[in-house]
Image (cartoon, rainbow over all chains, first blue to last red; front, top):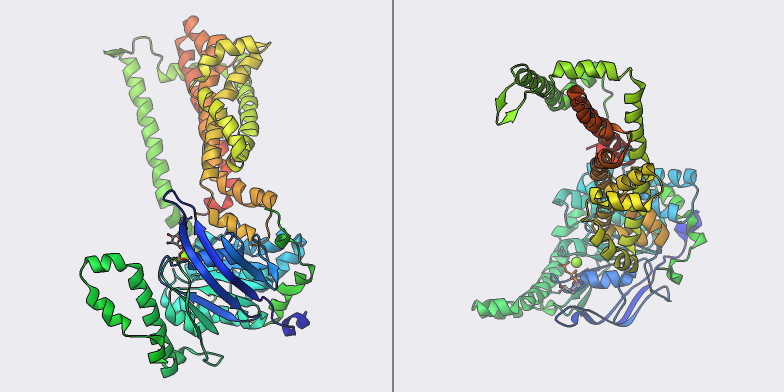
Length: 290
Length: 303
Ligand SMILES: Nc1ncnc2c1ncn2[C@@H]1O[C@H](COP(=O)(O)OP(=O)(O)OP(=O)(O)O)[C@@H](O)[C@H]1O
Ligand SMILES: [Mg+2]
């Protein structure tokens, strides 16, 4: 078993020439266009971008819930054409099964795989212990706090040993302190399992703090505006968020996103006669700050 | 939903253990203090204070109802409605003590319960799976729904003549009417429950490796259970309504027939007795269903 831990990192995600449009009454809605991203085995990559730019769309396509209109998504060279336990997913809305106890939720993937009851019970207990949730194994999700629910969600997604973990704004609904703890737990598990992580967030600090690399998307139709490597060394501490290096990265990403957010709201802003604001913000660019 | 990507990866079987070896993750666990008996009793009282009060008020209200009934009948009040011939609570109690030693009365009760049991069970056995399948497969929905919508507004009592033509025995036609009464509420509520299943939960199950059948069993069914039980509760009520109507029109036995017969035989106390028996039986059966609901859905009763 330890050879799996020591083994090669897994989960090489590749998204090539990707575009996706939704059908609607007013005709097709181009959500994502001409997008290339990749995640190396064992890498932690975040996607940030203005609201509605297609982050969730992209992630759902990697998960296999959506079919690309053009282009391909592959994981370890295999084309993705449906959801699978190989690609674990954590949702913003927690999405625990309310009718299952915490332990039964964690066991679910193993049950689907046909693992014997006693075996999967033991596995689930161990996993819950690692996440500090053993006292809650018999609780129903409704009684848990948001942070606990999301810990269960992460543990549940990891229980089947996926190659890739996909997270869509998993900590969006949590308070700041809980969020920090969750970030540590996630980093910890990621480093130990050596799987690749694709993480969608709108929190720039979170993206920088967690990631090896950050993709910034343009306003809809979304595509990759910039790819920013995060050279901060690991293990990362909270205190790093005050370092000049961190702040520089933050400033750069911030201006990129603000530019796109303004573009996304472009119509409304010029209607309100606020072009001045627009121009001022265009002055910044990532090159200036880094 | 089947795709090569869903295929199992036997080499992954060890991974949970691999995580297990990785050592603990920083996390917070709440301290647990062992409670004593006294604190438990006190806590129970505090948690159930509202319920105790409701019970007390309920009992007082029932007693008040009996008192008003008693006064209205002893003074034979005539004020728009006439209480001249209405039996008093004591008269009804007297006929109740007589009836419980009367095998004929008991037979009426048992027969009605049997009809309810068979009719209602059949409705649940057919209605719930049909609703689940209709909710999951569009084509089945498209085929069944129009027919159901046309038949649904027809009250079960209106089926009496047709039922008598359809079924060889009276007993079967009464059970059929009971079945019809409870069938539609069960079907409609099951369908409603299916339409409200959170698609995110379905997705969560899919990316944990669940296939169509497991998703049905592990997600759609439990997610619809609260609405299924609403349907069963409503269905049980309508089943009694339909049964009593059918028994009054075409029956020879049953508590509905007993009540009607009492009127024909001018045994006024028995009319009230029959009515109260119907009320108690209806209440008892819905309590049973609620109890079953708590058993089947423990995640909801811990609220
Ligand atoms: N089913 C759908 N039909 C039509 N349009 C859709 C559908 N789902 C999403 N869209 C549109 O596609 C765009 C991208 O949506 P998506 O949910 O991927 O954005 P997002 O970046 O995740 O946004 P947010 O930050 O608000 O979560 C949005 O403008 C949205 O309105
Ligand atoms: Mg989103």
